[in-house]
Amino acid sequence: MIVSRNSAKFQIAALAIIILLGAALRAVRLDSPFRGVHDSDNTIFGSVLQAQLKWGPLKTHFEPIRYAGSVPYENLYKHPSHWPAPIAVCWAIATIAGAQYDALCEWQVRLGPFIFSIVGMIAFYFLLARLLDEAFALLATLFLATSPFFVCFDIHAGSFLSFELMCAFLGLNFLLRYLENRGGRGSLIASLVLLSITCFSTWSGSIGFVVAFAMAVWIPSGKEKRAAIALIIAGIVSAGLLLAYIHHVGLLEGFGQRFSKRTSGEGTVGIAEFAMLGGKRTAFAVSPVLLILAAGWFFAFFASRGWKNRDGLGALILGIFVWCALALVVFRNALVAHEYYWHGFSLGCIVAGAHMLRLAYERFRHRPRIANGMVVAITLLTLGWFAWGNERRFSQTHGYPLEYPLAAEIREIAKPDEEVMTNLAALDYYANYYSGRYILANVKSAGAISEARKDSPSISFRTFVTMTLSGARSIPEFRDLSSAELDRFGIIPDDDPLIASLNQICGEPEESGGFLFYKLPAEERGN
Image: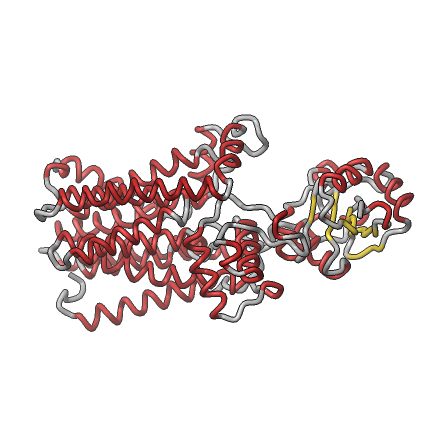
């Protein structure tokens, strides 16, 4: 090897440097505004965390309730993509960090996922060190620490990716200890508990049992049957508890409606579009060198009839790809092809690529210069690609051009107990988080205002916000857009009938930041 396998101090020092590098890359965006890739999901979880901090877990039962200003607790929306396990842990971390529901910072929202990612990288190393070897486990951990995909989504609170992977890696470590006779029943129980927790972290977390089951039946130890049976039982129990939880908080109906409308609703994708969209979004997150190496590993595996040679690492890699394939089948039903659904693909390429690089090194081991030069060259090419990808990630910080300034202006103009309506096509949950107010979007007419008040008598809508074409020019991202493009945001002409209706009902508006704020009169509140 490039370094002695017996150099324990070097291994520990190298691992520490890699973990610090990964932590530094993730910390760069820890306190940045939620204006990057898929950051609207972070605002959803921010609102969920605000609800936990305000009312406490005894009242919320860690249900995914979104806080929204002064709206009564019983009227709050339960968001169907956030689960109790990471919510509970993130609430504890945020509480220790001194977070307040009415002054929740971006870094406090991301702090839990940041910690999960650090623990997950360490667990990932020790898992591969047992299945691969220490030096190439370090190499795979380096790729995991610097991959643009994981640098971005490890601190993404909306996906809980880092929590899922942390629990999965820890669970697989305990399972490996049990199968290798380095741990007793306690290790098996710890593995089952951690893998069960992944079921309550994300939709794809329950599929983590696939990887564990593959390892359990593929690693010859004399304990395969006992481990496999225990995993099957734990998986069935976890699935049952998960379905009971989903039914309890009323999420099943909401997801059923989403899936049934996926072929006709706005933003839906077909199978081909889903694969193309996900492939484009993740292509730069995995180095082409790693893709080639991963493909080479598959060829080497099947050429050597590896399925007959019961190999723990082969089981891990194949299990990860099966995990990814099953997750994609599940999430193909979602309305949008979120990039983080492809995490199994990126992780599988990292592990398979590092293993193939190890096999290539062993092939040329008798010629150290060639072997070492090959490893160094491929590592530098991969890190160079990752540096380019991370630079692109860090530069994508100007998203949500309507919601971000809208929320800022609402916080300035509207009073804390004033809930807001708008005709703008804004992501209401994004504006909810940054404004601290309940916001009802896409209210297109004066009649719709009255109808919304009748439908929600317990919510006091006191402000209506709109924007005209002339006002939109004050926002830099909108200056070069055409009228047709601005219409997609719900921005209306200056002489739109809605303006005339609002002027008649509310009087002259207050202008701020290009937005027009109308105070709804008392008789229009439905109080």
